[in-house]
Image (cartoon, rainbow, N blue to C red):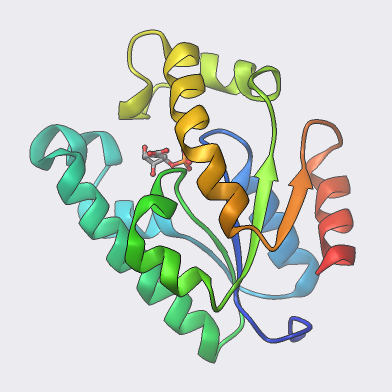
Length: 172
Ligand code: S3P
């Protein structure tokens, strides 16, 4: 296991479908570190995100999500890891505070980059109906938050996951 340069947890943030999980997994693989996808942690403990939204509402989901994020960051401070967050996790003020002690990588894209993946989307409760319009509206409100929290802004509009992973490793 190789240490991350300054020992801080590396946390990938950005909008839905930008590739946080794929790029996070790739980076973790390159660095021989564990990868924690907080959406996956929530699903493993509570069932599908769509079911949580439908049964308990978005507010309950955000509480569960914030706890999963806090746990992942605390664990990555002890045992280095690469973490990816759900697109809306950065809205929580406690999470924002914890991110101050992490290397936050904002994966920057545009609507075109995610359009194909969004079209194939089925499970994301916030993208029901006109998914692309909803994605753009959420991105517009959250973009300043991603930008404010970012230590590294990584343009992911072009390049394969492997290329982006290598480029990101160089920038850590
Ligand atoms: C959400 C993003 C999703 C998931 C949930 C809500 C959001 O994660 O956490 O559907 O509010 O942007 P991804 O960004 O991995 O799709």
